[in-house]
Image (cartoon, rainbow, N blue to C red; front, top):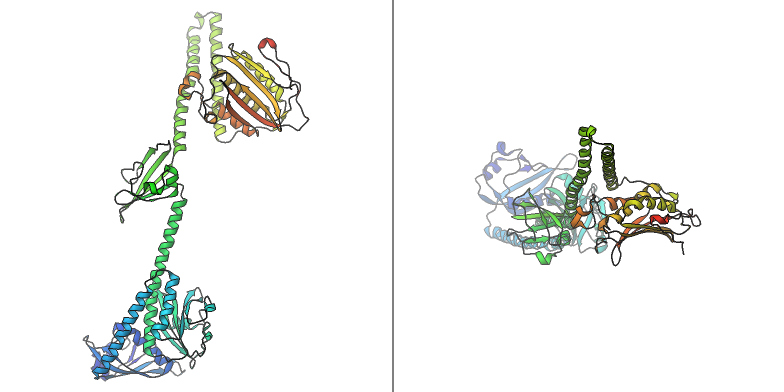
Amino acid sequence: MAVDPALRVAAWNPAAERMFGWSAAEIRGLPLPIVPDELMAEYHAVLERVRAGGPLSIVSRRLRRDGSAIDVRMDTSCLYGDDGGVAGWVAVFHPYEDAGTVRSHMTERARLVRRLTDVVADINADLDLGAVLDRIAHSLTELTGADAGGFVLIEDDRLRLVSLTRLSAHLRGYSAPLASSLFGELLRSGKTVLLATDDTRSLDDLIWADLDGLHTIALGVSNVQGRPYGALYALYSRRKVGHVELELLELLAAHAGVALGNAMAYQEIVRQRAHEHAVVDSSADGIAVLGRSGRVRKWNRSAAELTGLSFAEVVGRPPPFPLPARQGENVKHRLAGGRWLEILVTDIPETGERVVDFRDISEAKALEEEKDLFLATAGHELRTPITVVQGFASTLAQRWDQLDEDARRSAVGTIAERSATLARLVENLLLGSAAAGGDLSSGAAPFDLARLLCDTTAAFRPFSPRHTLLLEVPERLPRAVGDPVATDVVIGQLLENAFKYSPDGGRIVVRAAADGDRVVVTVDDEGIGIPKGDEERVFGRFVQGEAGDRRRFGGIGLGLYIVRRLAHAQGGEVTAHARHPRGTRMRFTLHRAEPGVSGTPAARPDADAGGTFHDAE
């Protein structure tokens, strides 16, 4: 029998037909069908050994066409082409009747198979890729009798020595081109094992010359998921290499590919788990995983922060909030601390687990409540002046001739007053919208703050007969840096609030003074004051003092929100402070102009209007 380099049958004589049952016409050009699967590695090893070392005679077992086995002595030699290269192999088969020798041969093979099984089990006992590679290299010398060895990985178009045994440690990590290596030759041949001796080629492949007396290199390819991943090199410097060693090398390399595939799959799972954990732990959403029983198995950092419950406090228990009835729905739930959560679930049918995702929607919920409150408040505030304007306008239109001059003037005056109220409401709404969108802008130039305070307080003195409005400024107040129009709105709103939230009357005092690089304006009243803890809340949108009695004071709760935004737009600040025993102090600051630049002397208010003036100390 003869086979070509692709191991297809090229010659099949009549004796082969009688011994194995196939005719030449049936088998020529096909892969050889007589080698049992469990002896395929031995078959490749024999061919490689013959190619590298000359004719070889062994006792083995082959299959007949009817499936029965026959023990044979097989003499194998190489066939050479005109160019001197290997053109195939020729084998002569003789029936072998020495049962004792066959039994001895099979016993030894069984022993080697058991040893190989033990070695493979040891290799697969670890799932760490580096540890698996080291186990493979160490098992190589024990199983094949090699004097040294190593495992190389394919990295793009190069090889890298990643594991070794009985070689100098400094060789680990050595790299060499794949194309010019023995491994490259093996891949181009399409075989799984290669034998190289110093009689047939150079042994300078990689850096194996580190081993003194090296005369033979055997290598087998390790495939992972059907693709070449690396190669197992067995190096011989003292003993000879037979087909059995090559067969074991081929089998070990194949099993190494399986072990490496398992280790790589495990590493990928670990990497994916680490990635998932990193994503889950870094998520701003709370994420929990519930087992089949509906009890918590996982609880990420955000879940603990959102609920205030650690993993130890919730593991093995139901989640501390209700869940949607089914996937695709959501539940909004308020925790005991006041925080609102939106909760969603995703079912994992394969494991029976449920992934719960929940996020903080307190801000959105508050905004929704603010919107509802604004609509209710704005509707109420607008309804009153509109109703009055509409009523008086209808009266004038329908009864003009029946009304005397005084009644007409009174009706028109009321319409004008209520229209002004409407204009202020609309202006505040527009300013509030601009402030929320960050569109408020103001200038920043030196201006006479003392003059502005005099004019503004003078305009407010007739506001209420129950209040006394006082102005206290130094004779030469430093000029402030800002926008006089925006500052007038700020002072006006602070005074309006002072009147509004002191319904029983009392003193309202406006003071101004320099303080370092700032000019400070305070507005003090003797009104209802600010509850402790609400000093910042009053600057929110749609917020008023006495939140439980909003209709008592009216308004839409945008005044201080706009004031703070206007102050910030000028580089200033406004804060609220409770006074004792009652009342509120509003503190407004602006940057001071260059030192030495002062405003004009403040005009002395009219004493009959209730104003006072105090010189600076």
